[in-house]
Structure formats: structure tokens, C-alpha cells
Length: 103
Image 1 (cartoon, helix red, strand yellow):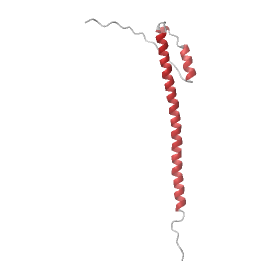
Image 2: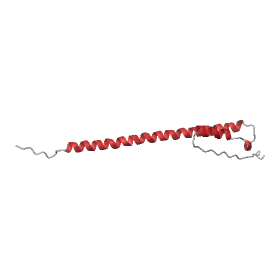
Image 3: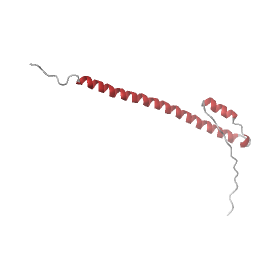
Image 4: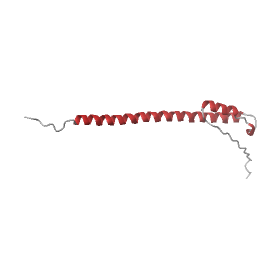
């Protein structure tokens, strides 16, 4: 009696397909980890920029000089050392306020 093997090789195809699916999932996880690291770096830079902006505002409040003559060169140097490759622009605006009119 001879037995006919109609499904020979099906286990090999299933193994190859499962390895393919596993490989795609692994590549997706590696890609996700890379994006997470990139986002963490960007978040750190945004946090440092926010801190430096607050530092500049604090220095302006403490400064006794007029805002138009405030020297930002030391702050610009600090920004360049903390966030390499960044550029800074500081503009000043003078505002005057008058007391409210009496009613």
C-alpha cells in the first residue's frame, strides 16, 4: 500500500511565512524605538529653549538698564553652548501705559 503525500512542504511554507511576519514586526519595533529616541531629543531641546527664554526674561526684569540697551551677547553665547546649531533673535518693544480714564 502506498500513501500519497498531498501536503508535503506545507510546514516549510508556514515557517517561512511566520518568519516573514516576525521580521516585519521586529523592523517596526526598531523603527518605533528610533522615532521615540528622536522625539526625546527634540523634547529635551524644546525644554532647554524654554528654560533659556525664561532666563532671558528674568535677566531683563532684573536689569536696571533700559530694555533697548540690554546686552544679549552673553545669553546668545549660552544658548549656542547649550543648544548647538541654534540661532537666536531678540527683539525689543517699548510700550507705554496710561492710567485709565476716570468715569
